[in-house]
Image 1: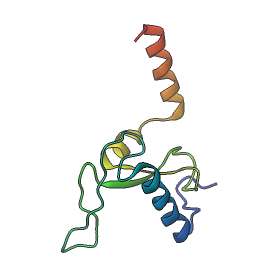
Image 2: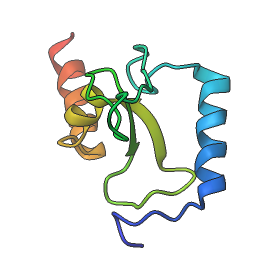
Image 3: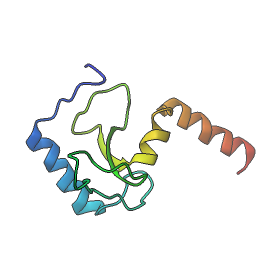
Length: 100
């Protein structure tokens, strides 16, 4: 599968968002901070708040699928873009090795 392709229909996407809100409310899936969905009164774009809602792929090597799409804050999205599953595993391994 193409890693940047969206494999969701519009209906599936909005169903995922509704499911997210039902389980987590308006909070980031990764950090738990409040996320906001607010449009500028003069623009059709979302306002660029650090805790603005952002759609991302949990695994950046897979496209937007039901299993791989998450709703997080803009800040979390910026940070996560540089992190792979393998890097997370190594970070946790080093924490354990160091006794932290």
